Amino acid sequence: MRLRQGDFARATVYGNDPAATAQEFEQQGASIIHVVDLDGARAGEPRNLAALKAMRAAVRCALEVSGGLRSMSSVEAVFAAGANYVSLGSATVLHPEFVRAAAQAWPGRVLGSIDVRAGRVAIRGWEQTSSLTMEQVALGLREAGVSALIVTDIVRDGTERGVDAAASAAFASRCAMPVIASGGVASLADIRALSVLFANGVVGVIVGRALYEGRFSLAEAIRAAEPAARAARKKQKH
Image (cartoon, rainbow, N blue to C red):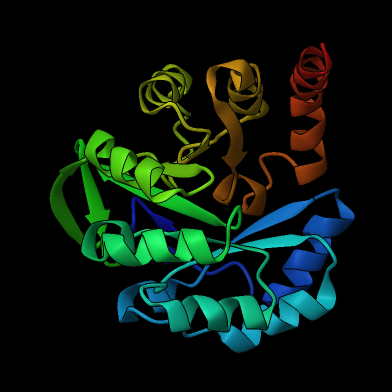
C-alpha cells in the first residue's frame, strides 16, 4: 500500500502478499527493503508482525522496519520478527529518551525518521504536525546516536513529482549525518541526481510508488545508481 502525501484517505493498494513483493525485490537485486507498518504508525505499536515474519522467511536481504515503534518492547518485537534495522519517527519527538536508549541498546541498527510537512516535523502516522523543525529534530537524533536519517518530504511523497536533490544535500550538510532521501521519486533521473550526492552525505533513496506503477524496475534503479556508487567506493579506498 502507498499513501499520497501521507493521506490515509488516498491510499492505493497494490497487493495483499508482502512476502511475495519482498521476494520480487530481492530477485531484482535489493540488499535492503524499507518496510512501513502503516497500521502501527497510527496505533502507536506494531500491528503487522505476522507479515514481517513472513517477509523474513521469504528473503535473505536486510529489512529496515518502521511504524509504531515507541517503546523498547516494540523494537524488541520487531527485531524478533526479523528486522535487521529499525527507523524511529514519532518517538523522536514524543519520547527522545527512548530513542537514545534504543540507539545504545542496538548500536548501528537504529535510524531516525524525519517526516516533514511545511517545514515542520509530522508525527503519529503523519496525522499530526509538531512545532519542531527538521533541523531541531536532527540535532537531537545525532546526539542520541542514531546511525542515519530517513528524511521524507510528505508533500512530494507518493506524487511522483520528482525529488529535490539539492535540498537533500543541503540538509545532510547542515545536520552532518548520512541522509536517506524519500518522497517524490518519479524517474531514473531522480535516482541518478541523488546518487551523485554521496560525497555530500546523501547515502540512499527510498523508492515506492514509482516501482509499483511500473515507471522503472528496481533492477533499473540499481543500475542507474551504480556508476556513482562505484565512484564513491573507489574514492573511499583512496
